Image (cartoon, rainbow, N blue to C red):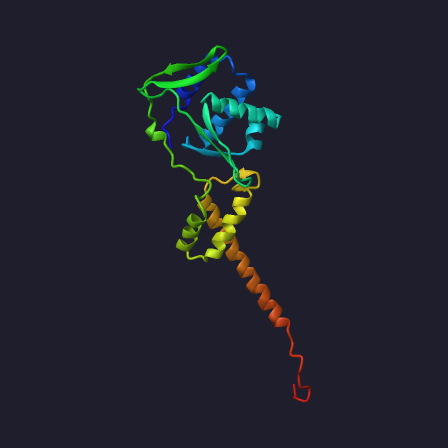
Length: 221
């Protein structure tokens, strides 16, 4: 997780925007949308994105425009775009921190006359007291989930079912992104336990309705 000062970073970004003549409104709106998701990810080094969510927030209505802006901003080094080849997993973005350290940061950007560097500098503002733990919305892999389920005395089959289900839906519940997969896993365990209890009750009720087919009616009641 990078240490980012929200206001200082955006001030430097706007300074760079103003001197980059290749940018248009869609480039700016895309960057601001990605900055929003970066902030939600607690300024992680890399974070996953969903194309539909980015297009909705940036008000970009065309997939062609979306991909063009993404390629442009990647080429101009506003961020690093890491596309996913797996349709079930989102692409990643690596944002570049600007301007709130005591060292100068060189940002190369495109102009009509070519590519030129812009030096941004300033004193880093470390808001340590405002730091919050990172909410990892998805596990690293199935093994990570399996270890967690085992620690809770659950069978590995449940871990595989949990992982495969949420991996297939992009780690979302409905339309909302999962913020903490471990909390989601514990909720999964509670629901599975409740379902198992319900099945046991229904099975006992069914068994009680069974009668003996070969009953001897010569026996007195």
